[in-house]
Image (cartoon, rainbow, N blue to C red):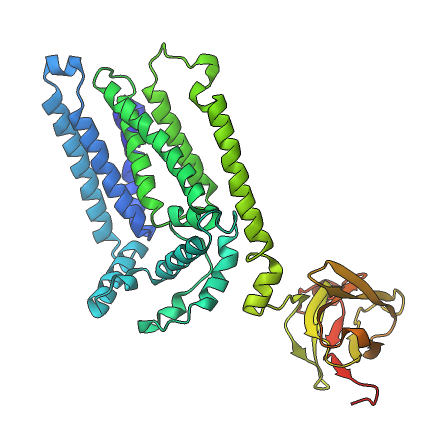
Length: 444
């Protein structure tokens, strides 16, 4: 907005000036501390670039002082708006957070209390990057590995900081990249940022000689600087609008850096497509993929993680509840699976289907034995339930004693109590599964 304010004239200047002022006024309501730092630095960068650069026409006309006065006045105006906003909205989210941060720091004298959530997220990202420096854990897998990293951290933290552990992105773009793509991925991202910085450097050299679009260029540069500050405290993994703004700013920088008669051969930068670089990229991707494939089939595999952290592959069930007869059970959805160890040769499985129309339309239930994470699946029984009453089914599994398997239930159809009977229960219910027990041939 600030760059557009100085670039355009007339009513457009009024529009962008009002937009900039409105942004500053509503800023205290955002509650984002890193954005406050980014905003302040961006304004300073814009002012510095605008004051230090001057064209030949300005040197002849002596406009430098006038422009410096205008820019200084605009910056003071912005600072006044921020101060007025802070004073007028002292109960706004940003003011409350800053006040609480200061009080916590005064009480504990440790920086970690300013953002304990980030402390754990950053620490986990560093740990993951240390274990998988060559490939990371894969795109989107940081948040999956995060609870496992928490589970391995047995350290006692002061001030009850453990309560601030949460599942989220790494809240630092660079650490997030290291955790998911390793240091090779970080190098690729740094290379992209370096290309952007080269465009900025090239553009700054041209600003002194050309007047057109320079304020838009300076505004875009200030915006990119602010973005770099923000990604030290946020990952923006799911914030597509933030990525769009970043590349829009980069587009403005590239556009402002091009001379009117400057053209790329064939419209493409040739240095990206040499045979040597193509070969290097192929080798790099092959090595990176090989390392990641090895990790995915070994230490990051489902079997390895399950054994390492004692995970249970339970899914498709609602929470346990107790019926009027004191029996404890859990409803399935259209399917449900639970992990269990076969303790004795015979297993008893109590089932109940409560569909209101069950006598007219019986419900079919298929029970499967799943081994080795769905590499082997065997049909244990196919049942047809035609009554709304508990029935116990018994099966013999002598060859599975001592093994851990997944018992998978598939139901032909579900029913919704809220839609069917008006009861305050919006769940889609399959069948109720009671306590599963084991016994030997003697019944004990």
